[in-house]
Image 1 (cartoon, rainbow, N blue to C red):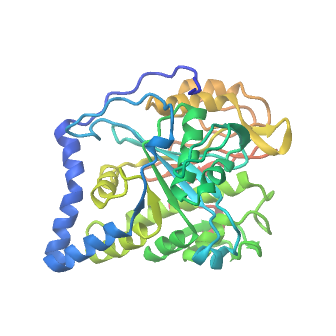
Image 2: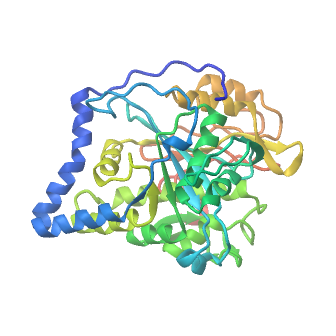
Image 3: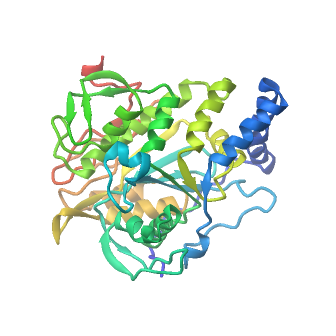
Length: 423
């Protein structure tokens, strides 16, 4: 049964008309037309076929069981005035090329899970990281081979492993989606899974990602060796930066500390993509899309060039981007695990209702959480945290995410508010 949460304010009226949203959807077709003009009909058709053929997809709807309520779609324009929730999953699969990169290990795991919420009026993008060590209720998960698991309580990232026992990445994603939906009450529209090799390929296709490294970092386990200051991370180094947990300059070695670095890397990647003017540089666009489409597994609703480009075009002018980690505290049963605090309920409810996740109601709930828990930035700030400044256009923000002690630096502005070491 779907978990119920505290009520949140009703959603704002979308600022899109049917014709405006249809225009966004048709831009995917315009992409192909532009490619035809640039390369000629034969070349463009070949490129389009290759890109579409790169994408691995699987419909997991039949595996999700009872789901949260979703607003009815417009049959003429399914995206008109509709919020979109995408579950981004970083897979720690260690076979084949991924085994060469990270060392061969059997089975499938997920180290990174982010719920990406795009508001119906396209004014906001909110990315919420879910700590892999969160103790949650994992529902019974059905797999495409006819097998199923039993309901259980465990670490959040166990859901991916449980689903993957069929050997299919899509089944792993389905169990993760089902866990998120039944734990949060948020309907997930799409899923995307990316592995080590795919991440490296996409970063390299961008020519690397410029980012501010606040201090020297050295992690032999992850293969990370970077110095303080502005660095342009190539694919392998960016992956090491995202994976590194233990080592010099990496804090307390916790997964929750690593999440902050992952969010900063994602923010820097967004900045890099926007700076490339990919939509006007067709050869560069095709190169990037070839890398991106070769590296993911997604649901059929997202796994097509027109659909992907439609979503990308619809948010190309969105400047209000926020990264945060769902509020958590140390688990009473195990100090090496975490549990979500009651502030998380308000945040999930806000996302489900498509209102800003950091509303007044969320701030009130956050302020009432127990001392030592993580807190989300809001208008009212809990003791022990610092308020985040209003982001400038293009800036992104992240909540403090400590494991045992409260950290106060929650601002992610790689191109706007760099630490002194990067100036």
